[in-house]
Length: 76
Length: 157
Image (cartoon, rainbow over all chains, first blue to last red; front, top):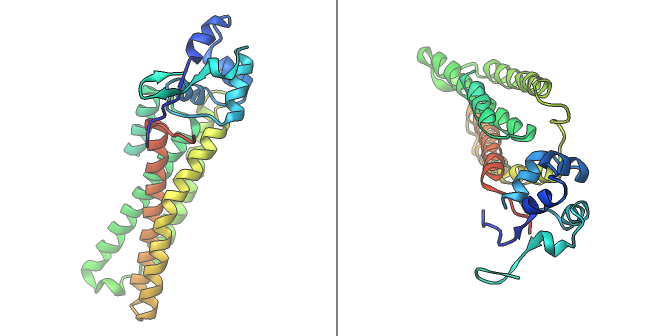
């Protein structure tokens, strides 16, 4: 499976949102905790709708949560 | 049963979802049931030609037993898991579809092989066994694909 170039800041943003646990985030966006772990670790790219739900729960715009590099090794 | 202890050992070592455990169960059961079937058929083959072996009863018993065992094990892991652990989310559904799509190839190969064997009027023992092997290979391949997707990652973008 080709690894994704999408990175995310979910772990940092969870702690900035009152130390939101993976289980709490999972419950609020309607997925399992294993899926939140997989997204955080870059092992799963969520759908656009799920990505927006995560951003809403973390109270930030989508591109504060997910980043995509403009070119090799450079995050936008 | 040792395979099931292995599943439990792996599940304890990392946070395995209900659906990943389910994929392990289906793969291990498919392989285990087929091994039992082969042992039964090859055991009987010692006293008669392979195509004369009464394969229908072992086939039906192993398939039936694996279905019953799979239902029992799913109920068991659901009851032993935390509340809500049986929930299937977007990632689970995508990985399930991905695994089934991969496994489907063996069903097609088995069907084509059986069709060719039927047209060539090959003994029905071989036709039935080709189809059974294709189903087993399909189940194992689907389970392996799902487990790899759970453990190594699964990207939809």
